[in-house]
Length: 456
Image 1 (cartoon, rainbow, N blue to C red):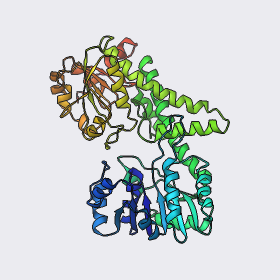
Image 2: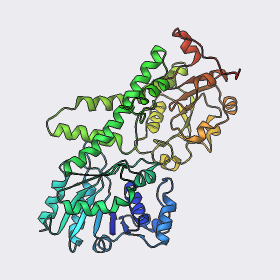
Image 3: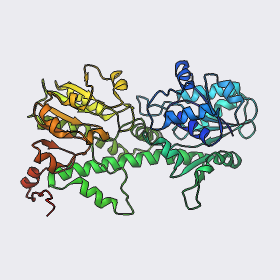
Image 4: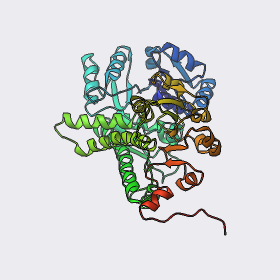
């Protein structure tokens, strides 16, 4: 098919490149001239595993192109994807200004029947807003255009894998023919009859599926962090507890890793937007609000743990930070709890030396008065504590003996539970994870010391 994708952020660029690789002719559009110029040469504006190669491959095959000219993309396409940002407003609702702007521009350049697919995450009621903009210009749904909502379920760092191996494809539309046409784009991804398929539903249902999915994932993270904090106080190990939960087929093991809480561009934004949507419709979502409150508490709990390990004060202490991105395998620091923790540490008088394999250029635009290290060892050198906030693989493979020698005091606060408490204690570290038990803490609570395996 001939496809146009408006917006070249994470969702838009991944969608465009992936659809092109399925044999479609795709034009991606963005107003940012510098961004488009870079994309034309295969240089993408962010890191996403495998994406740069896919963009370059499809540029060479002439299946993918980039332009700032909306009319060029729209007039030559049958299906138009809208994949612009819907950031959070200060009031908690989704900011639909980019959606409104794109819709107003579309109506001016459309010629002939088009299928408009909204990929952006938008609240219930947005379809009526879009339809009203078209109606004001004399464009009729079902004649000049049809609208389809196709929410994305892409994890940053694994976005291409998720696109090509979907758990489900949700298509919400008022017009069955338009929905089936969009479904044709994704049918090559369903290779076996037993694999999850395409869900055809209403527009309102499609929107709520997206919001409900992200909110449920956020709730699992807040839940396991609550359990982790209880584990620390009663002598249990959250890793073992989560493993036991994961064996239950009713629960599964996804999003049950205790840590510093959820962040990134989606979960918090969508949770707050759903809370605001409920309130706007006269319902107070107490459970959803508690998920958010728990996440805020988890950030403060990490800071408390760092402060406690350092004798109750952070003033004039140097803290080494490993990890700035909101998760590994991405350069994205949007709504990163790592950055929030750093700001709280600075507020209490700490000086920060931070390192991240990919996210430092982005972090430097936001985090001021922070020293950026060349590597993990440089971040540790001379620091009174080392704090792990993103679970990059390279942090799991550090020479811990060298780290211990570099630290001014051998304190490690592991906000991602990448190390084992027993091993860290044996090496002489004052180590604290999230919901994990060091041998000393376990003994203090009446438990048994776990002996290292000897092989005998």
